[in-house]
Image 1 (cartoon, rainbow, N blue to C red):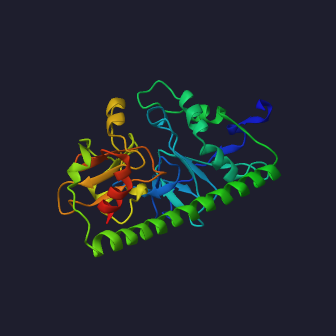
Image 2: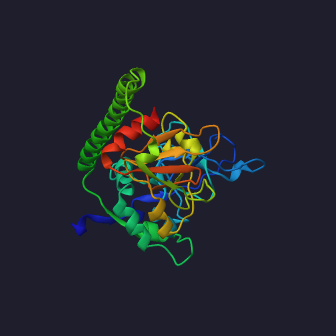
Image 3: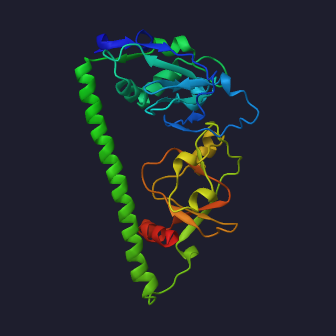
Length: 302
């Protein structure tokens, strides 16, 4: 098996094209979950000609915080129009796409095993940077181009099924809310019980939110007051390992805003969300008996 593993640097090349003619106007960053996103950097008065251009089928990555975040933010562009990224990012492309598919390489970059391996290659800096040579020295299996196409095709089928299932889950949640409203709100003939008779409560973690990927996601009131939590726009926070375990959110948790104009707004968390803690202006409801979890979630979300 290891004989099929090849050095990444033998198949890619660094691309250093600056935005000297200001041809690109869109500035994007890289999310820790490995996709491009709108940049939150303040660029007023910044010379944008120094920013790097990314074109379709090119990659960009941020090697600065790998040791700290235990991940390497890297993303593949599928955009037809070029855009800008920070001059601190690396932009690279595959030298021969008849030997290595960009989509196959991005699949490998997306694996947790790749992030763990990258962590071992980081330097002794406090942020744990990953040198370009060390990145290039990492290895991955490269089967035949036909096999790569087959793997990518099957992967895309699975990803499409996941997207369809998520849409189905959203519709089922709407149906559950409709049933809840019909049975327990419109009929109005049920016994009323105070929530504090059914749950224990926990206030959230006090810290400043950051757009930089300095730790787990930091769920705030503004995130739960919407119809759905937009995880792409949820910021991050710095937190110790002990506090992370104390305030970490888990599937089935119910969080409610406890102050401000949106007090009472809340969400029950389902599956498939990133590592996350909740902010101090949210309160977590912990049912005394698990059988109340879904019912309370529907009640709070109604």
